[in-house]
Length: 290
Ligand SMILES: NC(=O)C1=CN([C@@H]2O[C@H](COP(=O)(O)OP(=O)(O)OC[C@H]3O[C@@H](n4cnc5c(N)ncnc54)[C@H](OP(=O)(O)O)[C@@H]3O)[C@@H](O)[C@H]2O)C=CC1
Ligand SMILES: Cc1cn([C@H]2C[C@H](O)[C@@H](COP(=O)(O)OP(=O)(O)O[C@H]3O[C@@H](C)C(=O)[C@@H](O)[C@H]3O)O2)c(=O)[nH]c1=O
Image 1 (spheres, rainbow, N blue to C red):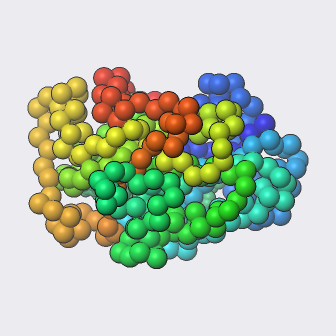
Image 2 (spheres, rainbow, N blue to C red):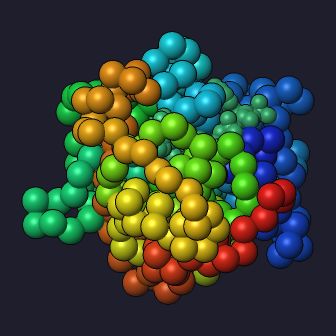
């Protein structure tokens, strides 16, 4: 039995779909029925449900995007920095292995050698290394709370996309935004992300931090070219001149725009599709609904 926290959310729903597809027994828990942000309630829930693994897909992301975290700071802090520590405490009291959905947005740019950031690189887009967004600062604090935790997977997701049109899908966002920031990013196919997270537990790979992104990196311009090639031949994309203009006209918080290495998880035997191929697959199988 797997306990799923945050199953009502965007990422939690993807976990639910995959757990159902794989016929894995699970229980999705919402704060409205059990306040899992309180350690004693979570411990009672773990014991009562006889869980053998827990997935924490709960957190605060801001709607429509992370700019909202600059305003709703207490929610962001509680959901992303405090909650992981509470879950750790409860799981440790119950000797329960678990996985935490983190974000790759605690980095900016790439390594000095031009490669993607690896798992134990120190975050450079966080409160300890400003400037950063409030959201990214909180996600990095959340990871700090898990430092040294045994039996714990930290799965770093980044800018999710897939073949289903929707307001949280990166490929849809690029089609809808008036103007675009040209950046180079590592990004995660949502379906592949949840499969990889579940496999990391099923295959008992070494617990620890994993960048769960599709191998490689892609620029916004490249994604737009693929959208034009496979979906919207006549679409004209307009770009901001630079990040300064993006911040003046469209955003209140800086974005992390970064490249991550996925070598650790693929070396552990978990398969992820090269990023351009994954985007192409999503666009070729584009669907207006889920
Ligand atoms: N979406 C994205 O682009 C990315 C998301 N992530 C991470 O994935 C996790 C899930 O994100 P996502 O599914 O997009 O978020 P959603 O807002 O869609 O869902 C998150 C769920 O978390 C629960 N929750 C627990 N504490 C809080 C809180 N303080 N504020 C708001 N919700 C809370 C809620 O469920 P309930 O009330 O039912 O318990 C909510 O439905 C987060 O940790 C996020 O940082 C990482 C990278 C990218
Ligand atoms: C607002 C806006 C963003 N963008 C770009 C910036 C960025 O590269 C990309 C996504 O930015 P958004 O503002 O839509 O989404 P954002 O909230 O920044 O997305 C992030 O959400 C949190 C939860 C994460 O953990 C991150 O991994 C990432 O998915 O789109 C534009 O090109 N034009 C725009 O008008």
